[in-house]
Amino acid sequence: MKDVTLRIASYNLQKCVGLDLRRRPDRSLEVIAALDAQIIVLQEADKRLPPRPAALPAYMAEDAGWRVVPVGAPGGSLGWHGNAMLLRPGLVVHEAEPIELPGFEPRGAIRVDLDTPLGPLRVVGLHLGLRRRDRLRQMAAIERALRALPPCPTVLAGDFNEWRGASALDATAQSVHFVRGPNSYPAPRPVAALDRFALSPALRAVATGSPRAQPARVASDHLPVWADVARKD
Image (tube, rainbow, N blue to C red; front, top):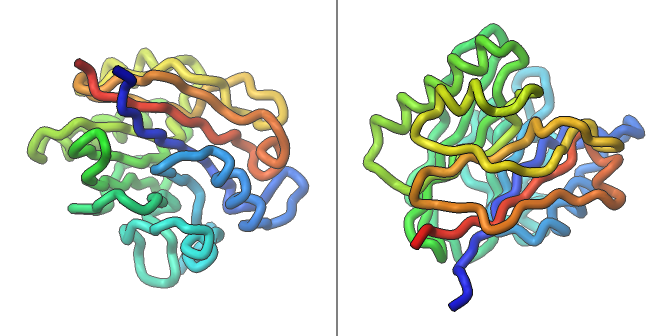
């Protein structure tokens, strides 16, 4: 019997500004559509300066058939500290909230609890800091937030900003295991797996991947990554 899988993708949009220095949210959506995912976790989906309006406008995502999960702040933001989540039809959102993260730079994460073909699923979208000590503190904060909730199969997805492998983060995030996936940064010639997935013990990754063709190689400085996730027997 074939596994029931759910494709989850993560993409750092770089505010929809490509390596050609053009802001092209339509191009970003073209890359997203080609991933054929049911859940897309985004980073840098908003512009940098307050009130941080969306770099990827919600109406464009909705016109392309996506549902934008409402976790954002006022002022037209698509998400929380640039983290956002898009869903294909058929997934039911039960709860969505931001998670405050410590650190030198303003950072945050989002947590969304869903009904999916895999059953109940919790997806955390995140973008960790540039300094390792901040990343470890941020992972610890996410762990504390999750421990305060009822148990649920969980996926962490996002830009972990970790160049030297996930071992240090893995030791901090003891409720999940990191998935070995493709390199995603920099987009023209990826040498680092900054964009990753981590799964709770009830889940496994059946396959992972990352597009290498245009326009993905120019639409952002990161390539998107995806994972086909299934429940363990």
